[in-house]
Every structure is written in structure tokens, then in C-alpha cells.
Image 1 (cartoon, rainbow, N blue to C red):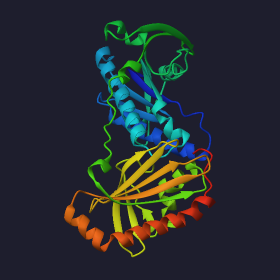
Image 2 (image 1 turned 90 degrees about the vertical axis):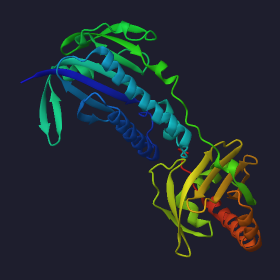
Image 3 (image 1 turned 120 degrees about the vertical axis):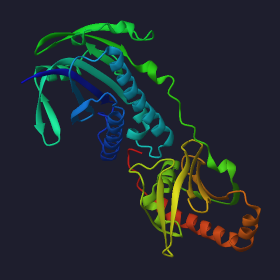
Image 4 (image 1 turned 30 degrees about the vertical axis):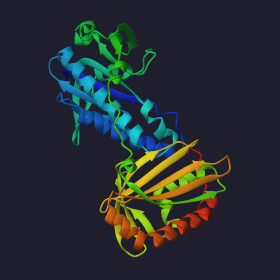
Length: 357
């Protein structure tokens, strides 16, 4: 027996043009994270029928919700969606097309009221019925921009009175159930006051105790790719056997990982900064969770065929520790860094950088 209720579909778009393997993997991961963000932003007791690729089919049986309450739910999801993307854009390390363009992903929301029937399949209630088809057909329309909220006339409210900044338009679409009239407004203005995360360069509070540089006959792109990716570090860094326990599928500022040393000891690290500027200096640093020492990797373009890597080592301000380091450890640490840079020469010359980077 059919019941009446709300159909609520947030739909993500913007990744369909990427076709290579790495970008597909990364775009799928980002979409997965965004779908979780949308689900976590649900505070209207909406039920999930199913995840449909880049969209979620929410529903709620009962009388139509007050339009103002419905707007608050749309706003919360929209802001959470873009807050995640802005944060990711400021903390990301990967420079593939999927990752650098993630911030441009868009979200539209379709809201429709009608009749449908739940069909229980394991833990989900799959919805069937004429209005479920209508709601999905409304995802394909002639609205020029991709970030909007669409409200069908079935909700029987006047959206023009909701917020002064909203500019509502009306249109209709021919569906299997006939012509469906709807109103829509762009949601872009909601992004204007989303704050960007404040990322402080941790090195500004520390003391540099060592700096070693070397030039390489490779492009800056090749050097950056080799240095930043953890899976290559053991090939050239003298102390490190491998890096594991990477906390995140796509590491970024703040994510943790573990150095397994050739001595058998381990060090827990976190990425403390990343600034990507292939025409200037790319700065990548990781900090030891225990003693707070930081190693900074600075890749610099000298010309189209020559690049320079500088390794810097930092302490927290501590005069006694610095004196002891200079007396007993500095010489060995400097030699270790120089040898690592020498081994890197062979690695970068043999490195094949994927086309997507």
C-alpha cells in the first residue's frame, strides 16, 4: 500500500570527466567522504533508502515538512559539503586532477512530495512508486547552473518568502506522470561566508639546526612526486625501512604515519605543512610526535631541467638541547642527510611520473 511522504535527493556532480585509474580511485574516495558528510548532516530524521552513485535517496513519511525547516536541512547539508571541500583543498597533498579540482564539485537538492511504497531489502527500504521515478527524472532538467534547491509544487508552499537573498525561478518538466511544476533557487551565496581553515606554518615557531641541498637533472614535477609519496622514501632515505600505518587513504596536513627505521625502532609522525608551488618552492614537512623535531623537504625549480631539494631539520626552542645536538649529533645527522640526497639522484632519474600528476 502506498504512503505519502517526502523525497529528498542531494546529488553531487563534477567528477564524470576523469577517466584514468588514479583519478577514478581518488574521486571515488572523495565522493565517499562527501556522502558521509551529507549523511552526518541529516538532523531531520530522514531515512536512507539507498546510495545512488553520487547521490542519496532520503525519504520521510508523513505530512509535508514546513518549507522553512526543509530549507534549514538543505542549508546544513550544503554548508557541510562545501566546508569539507574547502578544508580538503587547503590540506591536500596529492596533485592529480581529481584532487585539485575537488573544491569545484557541486551539490543540488531535489525535494518532492508524493506517494511511494517501501520494499525491505536487508537493512534498507528500497522505494518504489510513480513519485520516486518523478523525483529522479527531475535530476535531469534545463537549469543552467549546478548548485540549486528544487522544490516541486507538491510541497504546496510559497518559497519566495523564505530568505531575502534567494532568487526563485519557476519551470516545469515533462515526466512519465505528466508535467511537473517546480521552483528553484541557486544556493551558491551560502558558500560566501564559509571560513577557510587557518593553517599555520609550524616551522615559524622552531629553530633550524641543519640544512643540506642538492641539485638533480630532473623536472620539478618528478622531484616533488618522488619526495612527497611515502612509498618511495625507503629507496633513498638512509634511516627508513618503510612507512606504514598511513592514517588516511589520501594523506594531508595533520594526518599521521609511522616510520619503521632500519634499526627496528619506529617513530610516529604527522604531516605538519604542505605548500605546493611548482614554479617557486614546494614545502613539505613532517614532525615527530614524541620529540617534536621536524624535517622539512623544500623542492625548488632551478630551470626546466634542473631542480633542487633542500632538507632542513628543526627543533623546538631549547638552548640546552641545541647545544647537546651540536656537540654530539649534528655531524652524523648532516652526513645522513647528505647520503640520502645522493641516493635520491638515482631514484629520481628512474622515476616514471603518472600522466595525471
